[in-house]
Length: 386
Image (cartoon, rainbow, N blue to C red; front, side, top):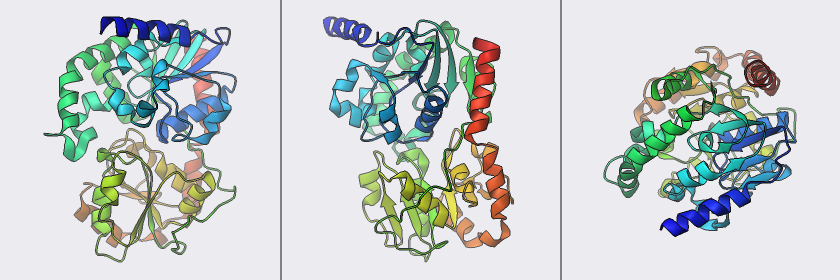
């Protein structure tokens, strides 16, 4: 085992040495999915297009296609296709892979949900933190109904002590300043790491004036369905939303991919569509034609209400997490207090789209646009890191 780990460490050092002359690099945990954190990396790539992106694993087929334009440096774990498609199974190896992944740049902007803050940045670095690792500090919420008794929960419980030590050492010993992506994450960083972090909200990336394409198999009319855009994970509460519309006349379009897809497709009611791997033009069609966005998960920030808001659409959101920063009750959406099917169904029954001003919602979305994000990130770097 020792020999195997030693060889892996040597391979990581060899593998992560290119482009040592670049002034700025970007680091991210893994680019194997389509989520809000990956959209932030795209925004950073847009702000610093010459910066290489360092990551443990990259799968161009399962993340956003825009990453094909970037120079991406991966660890040897990326050679294992099975792990690229099931990155959670790489959990025991990720601390080693992260700790040995060398980023040779004078300045590294780290986008982290639990791993990239442990990369070996040779110069100065700043961590844009989406959250301290959910699977360590919010594991019951992260695992949902599988939090007790399941194999995943047992493996995580066994690994938690060593992972927690590694995580806190990486956060504190590298002396990296932190930026939080929301108010709730700001408090979480202070609680977990003892670090005071300013907040810079992520940007939405929607261009509402670009082309739209109807999604095959979704023949519903404009304003005739509610929309969820989410990775299919337990804490996203997708099953609760599906159960909420089961046996009703409400229609629900779920866009996403993830480990719960097979489970969710079982016994899917006729008034629910579940699709994934869509083009951006199809995503724009979904936002433009829904009645409202439905966001009932515990999000660290939660970008989908803002993407819907770019098209003037309100959001029915859980009164928690990052939605506290992005929803103006009565103006851009409404809150529900619990994410259970009965609560979601009650919110759908009382929803009145006519009470909202689409232009006011669009104006609200603009305050979270890319220009603001780029300006605030560069101002922070100029003041605190450069």
